[in-house]
Length: 94
Image 1 (cartoon, rainbow, N blue to C red):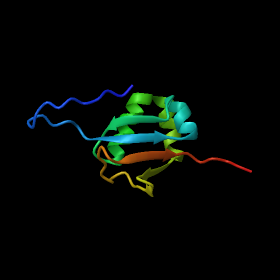
Image 2: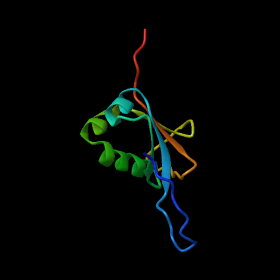
Image 3: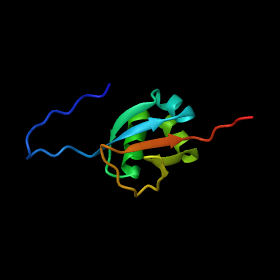
Image 4: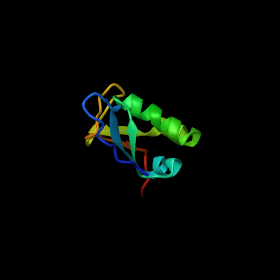
């Protein structure tokens, strides 16, 4: 469950966050398809996600493509609360 952030005045700075979208095996490993995760870069978001979801999730990550706002993204891409980080594992079809 995502909790709303309360305004605490101008002197309080919240850590940066991004909206996380998970698909296929990444969603199964995490047990959710959406979350809000602290991090100022893609790498930060992925690291926080591994801590939150554990080893099964970490095992899926190397096969995933990472996109930010619908575009392929590298680990050093900055993210903020209006950004969506999506993890797309390979899918097979036929």
